[in-house]
Image (cartoon, rainbow, N blue to C red; front, top):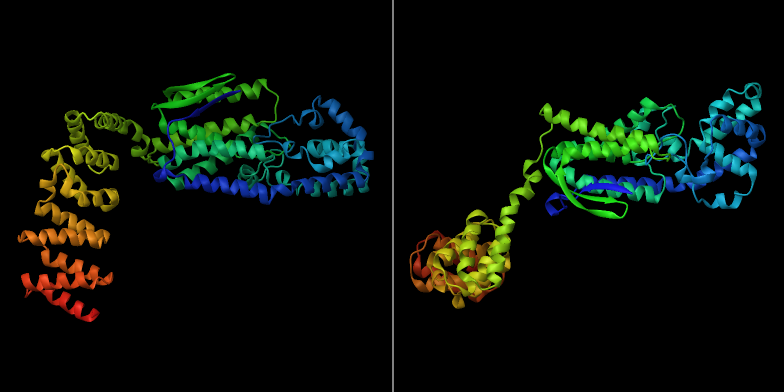
Length: 509
């Protein structure tokens, strides 16, 4: 077992790989709504082969063909085939453990039928046989068998180098041999998909994924004329692996490795993994005998890498640099945040004030920074830091400030270590505006009363009173509406806001 995968990034709400999820859903649906019926199709095909009498005519010919082609290992032995096919898996894998197989596994004709079904290259030997060419009945029965076989998903929609179709180059990447083949590919699709989708952009990512899948099978086509179909997403996923290395280039990436009993993490420039991954596929191609389509893997890996490198060289493939380098840029901030948490936890106020001031300056809208600053300032008086905190809190977009933090600030202002600052009219006015935007009537009314009691001229006072009055009316708080209307008429009797609020109150009576 040899495995190396990136462990650099993790999905978040901001970087959810929607296209990757869509690709996974499509692959799962194709398998469980269409391919799941292959068992019945295979059983019908095998039965037709036997019932047509073809075993009698083709048994000796097949044995000779096996001998000539050195077929020492057949599907009966260990479900292998002799050429390509894949994780882009050959059709052998979907034929395992079907109910009809158990029923007929001891019957020689059915054993032969399964072998013939699994060796479409044998078709050429049949057509080249002199007896077949003279026997019209044999030709007709053979044609009927092949037509039925071609309705099986991997023959119908897989890619067959000996009978290539443009549609097969595309559709083969959405078929799989069995549930475990599907599961393995979808896990790797997710691992590389979420790491690339945001960096490349969703539409470019999808286009490159599909292009890599096509290139992976086209590369296999260059080296094979087999009639065995290849299916699976692993060629396209190998393309994602190549894209990943091209996108991150010389950037040092954290990788997870697993070799036999050893596993762990290491960091290395991403592009250095290209010869490692390519070497693994070449080793499998040259020195192993499995049904994994190493040609497709190599084609996808090199194709995906080349597509991204060419796109970047021609400046046709812009990347999300903020996403790619987010972790490096965030490292100093995270270190400072940990230091602030530690200082607050250890009640080291002086050190915490210094740390909090620096973080508020560099990240004034970060929720964790705001929460830690509030926890510090609630019990520690520091006017300079409190001014900076309140400024950051009130200038930040409403979506960036936790609502309960604002409510705490207002409700606890009389018992706050920095209550003098929190009772300043300008601060109360800013808090009133924020409470009105959040539609917190009771809290806003409390702030309004406190400001009204100070008897100081304030900007926008009539407008804010009108807004608060309308909010009270909407919430059916008629006593509060009356209080606000009378105060506005008394202080600003000739204002448009006073006239509007009075008319609004009369309307609701």
